[in-house]
Length: 251
View (cartoon, rainbow, N blue to C red):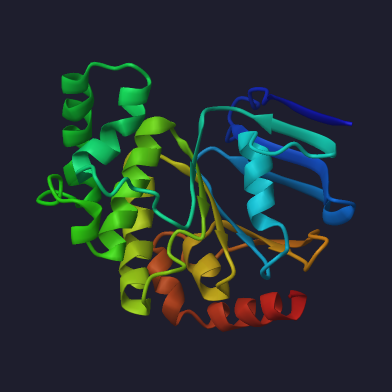
């Protein structure tokens, strides 16, 4: 049996749990993709889902958003979810501001109001000066910022990010990681982040779930308890290497 339901409010004084998966299982054409997946996110957390290619990471996000149904288990959601895939999916014939405002247009919002809301957020994600450009005139990092803001406007405070920096070069990727942490803090976001980059998962996350190869199962949940005040300081923390070695041993 499979069920999708609203998450219940958490206990007073505790961080509210906004997503919970309990014993999720999934098959495609008789082949087992996910087995007994259980995980949770609390409000304001940054949690990474780390695993090899083909381990079912994207399938987990599809189940959370309702794009796919699990065969077994329960999904509890406590808010509106935004889902951003690795490919930016910006419409090449629309300007950045029109791409960002598109979800509001599709909801029937007044075009002038939609553009005003998008304009009010442009500065907060570092896109001022790019709003009237077309996607083909922008770098990969800037396109990802536009795609992120469009997803944020469409959803709310829970973001599912499927390897958003996977196609970026190392320097752009590093700057985008720092940018994402700043935006998360500014907007109070809860983020579930898919990656197969061990260091990226450690640098960004409060917790990391490590998946096995197919069929994907949760091998371990790791709390990242160092560099809490400044996550970028983890780069020079000796604990980084130790955690990387631990995760490699699980994969």
